Image (cartoon, rainbow, N blue to C red; front, side, top):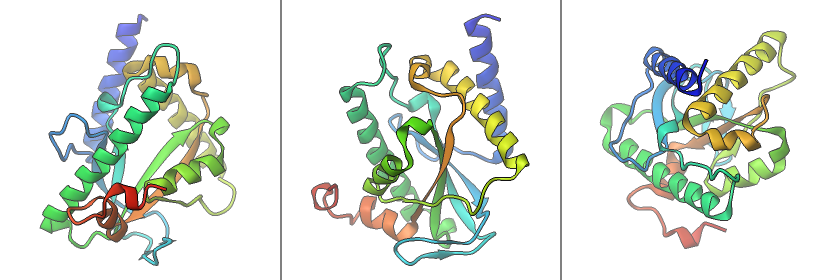
Length: 207
């Protein structure tokens, strides 16, 4: 199978999965790197700002918009690419905050969640620091994963490898096949305080 055939197949599977999971494109901003869906929280979560989410409560799920991610240079990640990614993150979170502010039918949603995958080389401590800079809490699952979860991680990692192959092949140079899934959470209150219309200037919180 050629690169074009495999990339086309991965894109088709990605489209079908998005349709099945109700993942929507909530903005026309070509610089936004997130799509959204409504999902029940899989567990009870207490966030660092005191927001307590109950198991089964509806939250907004963040999904990467692969077509909009900054393309990694062929030689691998660079400082310029990292800066573009950080700017895209802030721009995208501002777009999400604007959506949350204007949509009255989601006024009861109290938190947003995303499960992002990174290779073990990044390290949990570094991942937590990076997430905190953007206002997220990193909350790992309780206990060791069961065998079903381990199988899911393997299959999910293979699928994510395929997405990188289809949308950002240069990024494969720095990606491990098996990657840890980091559970990122941010409360509605913190999202709007950081990125909403009345948010403080970035210089007040970026450090």
